[in-house]
Length: 156
Image (tube, rainbow, N blue to C red; front, side, top):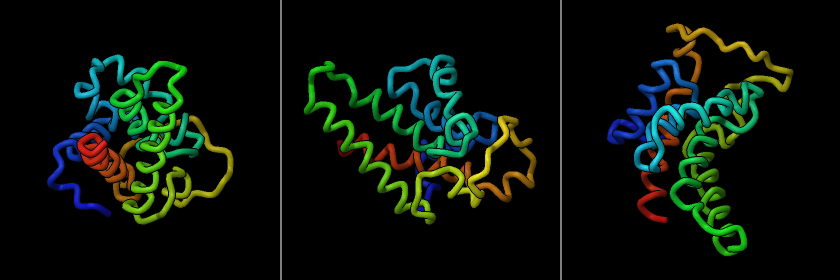
């Protein structure tokens, strides 16, 4: 996985996750000010995307958080602007590919990143213990998504 130690945004996203914010919130909140969003609004609108969309273990919340920030930065086009939509979708697809390449698992699907089977998942959050942090790649994935945003926002 990408070295996250030199990225202040990665460090912030990982810290937010360890404070109890979910994976999506951690990425969004690490970038909210830069995207013109206030902290409490950003925390609220990204809350439902944790755990792979409401803990359904679908698309990783760190990716959806990054997608929201990319939308805030590059998605301000009118609805009839098909070129703007195309460019936005292209940015999202490029981001997803980079995330797959960098995370070591080759996926953006939460359950695959966590090594879980495809059964129905409980909405009850897992308690955040030291054991939890030893088993879960979530803080590092939040850091990865936040660090990749630095690259994408500079180059797009």
